[in-house]
Image (tube, rainbow over all chains, first blue to last red; front, side, top):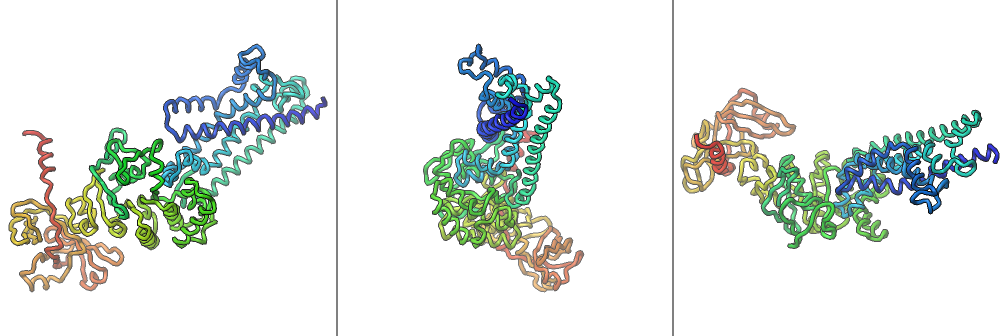
Length: 228
Length: 369
């Protein structure tokens, strides 16, 4: 495999794995965050504490434990996930979901709680009222998913352990950078670094513009009476 | 029905009935429990003790297990418009959407409702572009479009400028009447309560202080609290000295006032006189008619100009506040320190029994000396 094709494969894989991990995290994390923010149930505070703690989970440790579970001789070894793209996505979902859930919880708690009450007084069920709040805080939702994506695309420890960083197969930009640096191929590693920085900047620009858009909606606050 | 928050009772009422088709105005100061009452009646919260009946059937409240079918026969409008993001149409159609009304019907009803409140041209506008008055009008339309049997309004017009508030009061009142909707209208403004309510209920500290027709509330308040809240500014304490044929003479600090009451002599009472009922006249007018009832001469101690009206305080020697037009204040040449006559009719005096129970409670609490 040529260096160029290795490069493009790693780039594509990084985007595909982290992108799908971010989307899956959104599907799990947004409802989880909403559940923690809008509903009272026993154990809610405990789960919230766990979610907050998991937001800063060391990727390499998550990678290690996941690997111990799915490795050929591990408890779920028979599934055959070892060194696959699938498990790379799984491990990134584990890393990104708490971030999405935590951010969702935070942005929902900033939305005027009377909005849900208003929706319910118009006949909405609790779930429908929660959807109103999620829609109201949609920039927060998008930001939470992007933050989750930003965390996993830059991460190296977990994907390299579970995926094995197999050249042309499970190598991502980050694992390739590590490899090439070890091999002394600094130019190529630095180039990959630039690509990663570019992605990171794009993500941040997107987030900032989202915040700016949110600023514009402040005008509407006076009218709608909500704070987001 | 009782409602506690963290061990503190915020609402404690024995019985309250809202009749079909009537508007009940709930009046009270901030923190008197009137908003809590609305949330309980709207089934958004559940009472700590007691039951809510809807058409005679008990219903459940609280976000988790409220009787959804019953709550869908009601709607609520809050002090802030609390519009959802999106277009005016999305907002007005929201209640219909959650009731799974088909799209075509939903759009048609939203359109008709907006036309009815005179905002048909705003249909596709984003709510962030609306003025405060328009937004609140949309909030009212959003509640009315679902044709609720009961509409709760929690100080809905408190944040609006007076002309807009007036307009919305009139519009809302006529729609409620036309459609026969029962309404509970919470406000802290006695004028608004009188304008909107078929009946008025005054709340004090989580309890019902008095309930009745607007006329009764203004002219026959049963407690000093209600009297003050209904705009009776002159409150005097006294004792009935003579009483015959429905007229009594009450001795107050520094004078004697004639009132219409059947209460017997010897009773302690509180008198209330609305400042609008007090007329100011030149001193000569009082002196020339010595026998005239409730005529006093006093010194002006304060004049407060309030736009078209003037609030004048007179020391007679008991304090008497009169509200007269700004024009008559100028014509009479009223100024601080000047001597003026004040006159009011015996029928204009509200007589409230002193709460002897309260005095006894305090004595018992203090214990034997």
